[in-house]
Length: 347
Picture 1: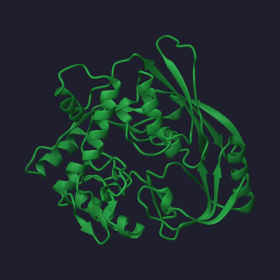
Picture 2: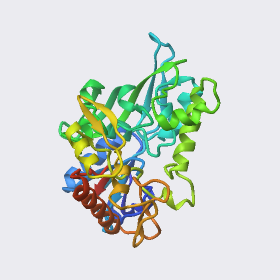
Picture 3: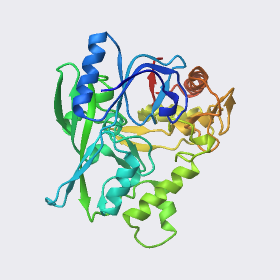
């Protein structure tokens, strides 16, 4: 295990913001994950687990502890398909979009709508990553992780992960307890693509023919590119953590209250259990924050109101102040409290 000191963290994040880690380790094996956790414990240091850095806002002062970057690699595929399923065992450090591309080439359905999402495989069960009508919760079979409390490796079935909208046990009741090292996915060979999302349906309707998995994944990437949600070198709108706020899930009474506070009927989507999901982007725009809004070097993406961006040289403090102003305006206008999606490090 190689321990580095005062390692800059900004280059490891899509925001490009943040000071140094007091100590830094990149673990290439499960043994090194255990060794790093033991070293941090022996030194009395806080431990933060870093994956792809696509959902983080790091303090300008950095992190006064050990940052453990999970660098485990490898993809294993079951040779035998069982009952119409194909299982992939994927190390946590694998690039997520690269894995999606592989499954599409293999003609296996289940994650094609999650193309173009930055980050690593290990982060997908933590956030229950989802977009364009799919969530990883629907295809995850098992999660392997290091239990920092028991100092041992454990495995969870999908049911034991406590998945909900952008939530799991790993970012809720057991936050910071587990280090994910492998995720097993159960995909459908020869399966049809998921076409639930309205924007995706509109884009694909132009061809007229039933789309392939590859065509759906390509369409998703085009949509993400148009919204500034696809990492492109030199594109200022890409210096973000993706969606900064979660879409609030509310009651019918709250939807009626929002409608009474606006000249426009709010867009709404069923969220189950009698609840309704409201687009945070719509609430933000109605509260007075348009695309391209700027606050110093922080700003709102010119292509998607839900993304806060580093316009160049932004600090974490500036991003948080902009987020605070947006959330306060939405709460005053609609009585809805927005919840931030990125993980705050050292803040």
